[in-house]
Every structure is written in structure tokens, then in C-alpha cells.
Amino acid sequence: MTQFIIKTLVSAIIIGIVSTIARKYPNLGGLIASLPLTSLLAFIWLYQETQSIQSVSELSIAIFWMILPTLPFFLILPFLLKKYPFYLAFGISVISLMVFYKLFMDVLKYFKIL
Image 1: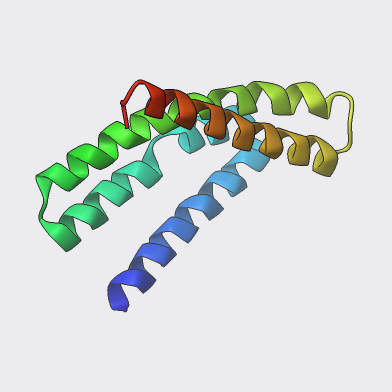
Image 2 (image 1 turned 120 degrees about the vertical axis):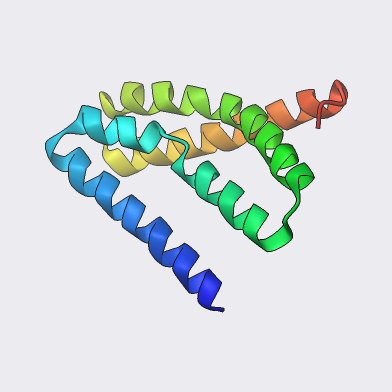
């Protein structure tokens, strides 16, 4: 339970830092947010819990493939924000993200990649 609390606190602190920095320095906030901090933490936590190099390797490969369908979200959101209120643009962008994930997963399964 202690490990879960530590993981949660570290993750929350990172999110808080990014959002605080992004208010004043959007580019720096974007840079920090784009760092694979969540992935790095996940690798550390997974290895600490399992001592399995194989599990870390499999997670790394899965993360690589799962990043690709997220990329359109970051183009769709700013485009929609120019025309629609935040929550509508954000909602449509999230729905498009889910659609891209589904399509991408179907492609990966078809080619037996994951």
C-alpha cells in the first residue's frame, strides 16, 4: 500500500508541476509534458515489483505503438479550439482519440504486431 501511495504522489506532483509551468511558459510545459515521465516511472515501478526485464521490454514496445494513435489528438484539439468552446473541442478530440486507438489496435492485430 505504501508503494501505491508513493507512486500516486510522485505522479500527482509531476502533473502539478507541468500544469503550473504551462500557465506561464506553454512551450516549456509542453516540453515537460512530452517527456515520457509516466513511461519512465512505469518502467521503474514495474521492474521494482517484478524484477522482470521481459515485462519492461514488452511494456516499452507497447508504449511505442500506443503513442502513434495519440498524435492526431494534438493536431485536432488546437484546430477545434479555434472554432468551438473548450469542453466541446476537448470532447470531440477525446472521441477522435478513442476512434484512432480502436482503428490502430485493429491494424496492429491484423498485422499481428501486438
